[in-house]
Amino acid sequence: MPADPADGPPHESIVDLVGALAYGELSAFAHLAADAELAPTLAGRRQMSAMASTEFGHHQQLVDRLVELGADPEQAMAPFVAALESYHDITSPSTWLESVVKAFVGDGMAADFYNEVAAFADPATSALIGSVLVDAGRAEFAVREVQAAIVADPAVAGRLALWARRLVGEAISQAQHVLADRDSLTMLLVQGTGDLAGIAALLTRITDRHGERMVALGL
Image (cartoon, rainbow, N blue to C red; front, side, top):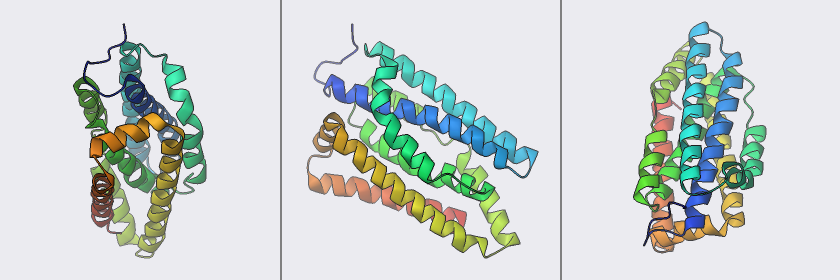
């Protein structure tokens, strides 16, 4: 039987939440693995490949949770394919540094959003999402790569700052499309935050953490 806790959020909203994140992790795996080919060093290639491997492991954990919920994993992920792949297509990095910033800033902002929404899920799902969205060394790696590049060529900072702003803009746009298409996720967000002020506070927290990432990168 579906693992739908009594007195918890509607089953459909939890399946949508886990399905969206499961496809996000699968997509991140594929794109990180491809972006690893842009690495100028074997060390960089190895690090990003390891990050991709971690993402796939997280994907499998989320798929297992979908099965526990009585959902078909492919059907649960399918509604989110178009928006996520559109985001990746529009923000395909052309350089190694762009791929590093995308992995840290773009994916980090998505993780912040899912962590916030996961707080409104049932305890088992919330705990799982928290565990799969750990940083796993991504911040240290990105900061090291970007700061070294800025030291070598200060002009890089301006270009990467523009790139980061573009990533955020596209991520927000695609998230809006997903919420507009999936009423269950919108209701989970509204019920969890309580009102428009709660949603505004959530968005402020996400924006603040994005600003912290930019500062850490030297951008």
